[in-house]
Image (cartoon, rainbow, N blue to C red; front, side, top):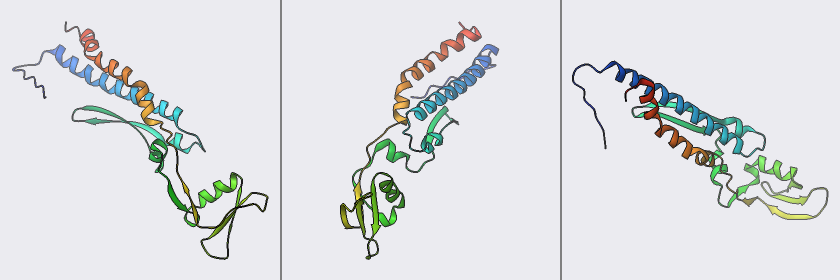
Length: 175
C-alpha cells in the first residue's frame, strides 16, 4: 500500500523542518544500528586467525524508500562458516591448506610413488591411518555470526524506529 500526501500551495515551514529532521534522524539511526550489528557480528565471528572478524563491515545505502544498513563480509568462505557445509570429498592434491591443517593436528601425510595418492600416519610414528588415499570427506558445522547479531538487536531496532515520528513531532512542535 502506498501513501501519498498532496499539499496544494506552500508547505508550512514546520513541515519542511520536520521532513529535514526526519531524514537526518533516519540516517543517523540507520548508521548507529548498522554499527551495533557489525560490532556484534565481529564479537560472534569464529576466530582462527582473525581474518573473518576483520573483514566484517557495515555500510549504509540510500534507497528510493529510505536507508538500508548492510552488514557483511568480504571473505569468500563466510557463508560456509555461517551456514556450515554438507559432507563432501576434498582431494589432497587440490587442498594444500587441508594438508597443512592435518599436519598441524597430529598427522603426517606422505605422497606415495603414485602421483595424487597419499599415506596418512599418526605424527612421529609408523602407525598408518590410511593407505593410498587421494583425499578425505569433510564437513563443517555451522557457526552463525551475522544472523544472530541481527536477531540480538532487531526488537530494539524496531522500537527505536517506531518511536521516531513522535520524537520528530516533539522536536518541531507540530502537536
